[in-house]
Length: 93
Image (cartoon, rainbow, N blue to C red; front, side):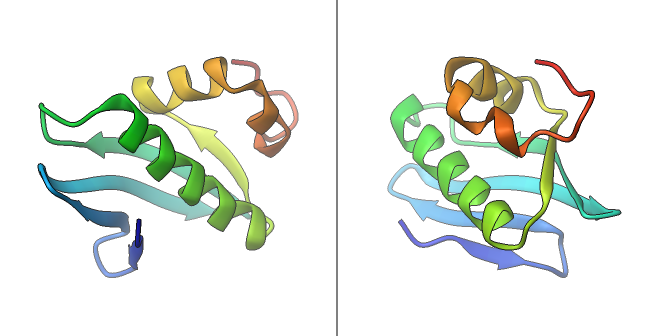
């Protein structure tokens, strides 16, 4: 899966067989706010999860803390506690 960081539109994108998968973001004070997830209705959850994992790898590489504000991204953090170290201090999910 190839992810494109579209900095102009402030979103991560990848093309799937079902359509375009997009995760909108904002970066403020070394924090990556994941604000909106747009995905095709027929898309499998495993593909969405892999996409989110790659976005989190990008954040880790850039040494950014992650603030999930979209419910599906928050749900991903709950199901995958290994990524909780990317949350800023004081944020509990």
